[in-house]
Amino acid sequence: MIAFVHGRVSVSSPGEVVLDVGGIGLTLQCTPTTAASLRPGDEARVPASLVVREDSLTLYGFADDDERTVFELLQTATGIGPRLAQAMLAVHPPDELRRIVAAEDLVALTRVPGVGRKGAQRIVIELRDKLGAPRAAAPPAGTGPDSGDGWQAPVHAALLGLGWTAREADAAIGEVAPMIGDGVDAADVATVLKAALRTLARP
Image 1: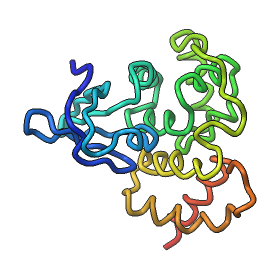
Image 2 (image 1 turned 120 degrees about the horizontal axis):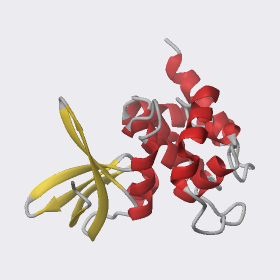
Image 3 (image 1 turned 180 degrees about the horizontal axis):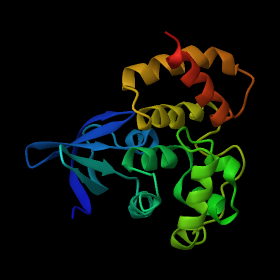
C-alpha cells in the first residue's frame, strides 16, 4: 500500500499533479483545491491512495492524511467509487462531510452530481458510524472553498468525477460563469453544477 509520495512538483493542474520522484514522474489525481496548493518546483509530501483495477493503476493525492482516510471510507459505501469519492471531497471537505452525514443532511449530499436521494440515504446509513464526528469547528460563513469564485474548483472536480474531460469541464464553467453575476458572494454549487451539466448535455 502506498501511504504518501515525496518528490518535486513538476506539473500542477486543476485535476492532477505530477511529482518527480527519483527521476520518475508520478501522476496523482487531486481535487482542484489540493492541486492548487502544490506549486511546480516545490518539494512536497503528498498523502496518497493507490486504486487498483484490472486495466489501470491510479494514484489519488490528498491535502492531508484525514482527506485520504475519508476518501477510502467513502468507497466502502455501496455505489461509491474513487472518482465519485473525489468529487464528494471537492464539494464537501472532510469535516463538512462528517457534519452532513451526522446531521443526515440529504440535500447537502445530493449537491454532488451523481449522488441522488437514495444514494444519499445509503451514505448516511452506511457511513454514519465510520466517519465519526467532525474534528474541527466549521469555518465562518463566506471563508470556505465555495466563497467568491471558489465555486469553480468544486464544480470542475465534480465534472471530472462524472467522467467529463478537463477541457469539457473548463468549457462548461466558462459558459455558466457569466450567469453567476459579479454581485454574488457565494455561488450555490448544486445550482452551478446543474447548469454546467445542462450545457454539456446539449448536442
